[in-house]
Length: 509
Image (tube, rainbow, N blue to C red; front, side, top):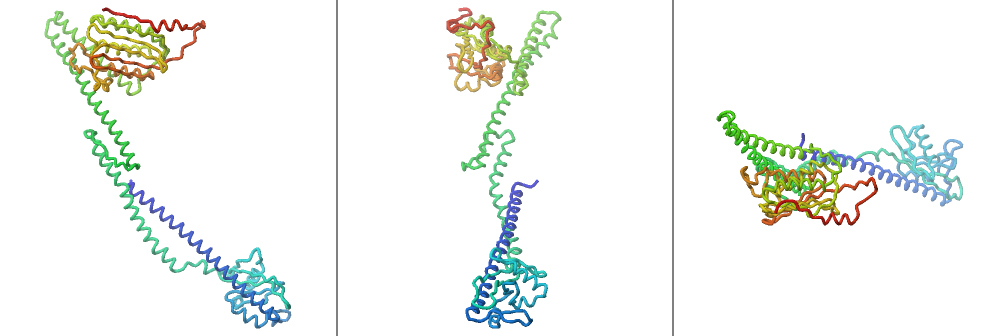
């Protein structure tokens, strides 16, 4: 496969050669047409000079024609013949009947058939067609006529004076032109090819630098490097900027992949170690003893924990590949939020956390009820996990102009501004606690799954937080069109206001 530089040089050379060929053909055509025009003008002048000689003879009170050598024929007078002999090339003087009164020396040297063809061509000339081409053997003659329309004072008036010349010299290429075409043109093409090679090399040199830089970066350990952008505003700068953006995304992806691998390994290593220790302990104690039951119970708990982790990872993997289907149907959010609030009350009861529903409006969305419940449970569980004993978690459901909003607000430890961009990353937790014995133990995948569920339903999941003041997670989903009621009844404005102002508190003080 030839390089781009070679292809550009070959294309330029082909274009230049073709252009030179077209230029040469056009030049030859223009030269031929110019020579033809010049020859026609010269013949016109010769015919005019002969016509003036005839006119001068008439004005000198001399007969234009006299008896010829053959009886019944006429020819120009000797004085006029001498004057006409000074006109070069082919010259014919015809009377009004088309008979030849005079022919030049060149015409007289022709054979009978050629003279007849020449005379026939001369008779074909007219004011509308002053020039006629006649073929004589291998040569072609151009005839140009000059009509003499003024009647002579006496004698036989010549109707037509025709001058001619060979067209062979018009088509002949001069020696100097052959020298230019066959000598200088190849040198010019070779010089142009060399220049094209150099110009293409200079133009592609920045591309070679970009290739070298990219080859140095693609090893996976130099993704922090960027291609130089010279701010010239050309295509190469755009290419470098685009590649820099791609490398930045790759760097982010590689970093996330490394963190994901490390975190997943950590999360799986600890339960496997505990599980192995429990199994070994169960094998060492007597069958049916209390120690064996405790060991097996711990092993079962660790197995369930690992199953949950693997299930969460599988869910995210399928979501990343787009192979996780969401079964959409109209879902009423009010009973769903109440159900999640009851579950949250059970989860927070031991810590005395109050679960409240300050705003609860009716709303229907198109979505997967099981996935939406998982989304809300993840948010509520996360809020309870990071809210100290005696705190409060609020769940609000409200309709907005741009959709349905579900908010989960807690009075927990909050998230620092530096950590907010990483909240939805996999295996990330606000307290950085990686110990499974922590009271806030978890995998750090709940918020990642929650964001995916929101996006799968065409919505968004956002967070606002202040360190030590708590956090608020807000889900915004597109609202579904309200189905018409069978009985034609609707909700009154008073009912809507009553539901909007309803405040329900569930929990313990």
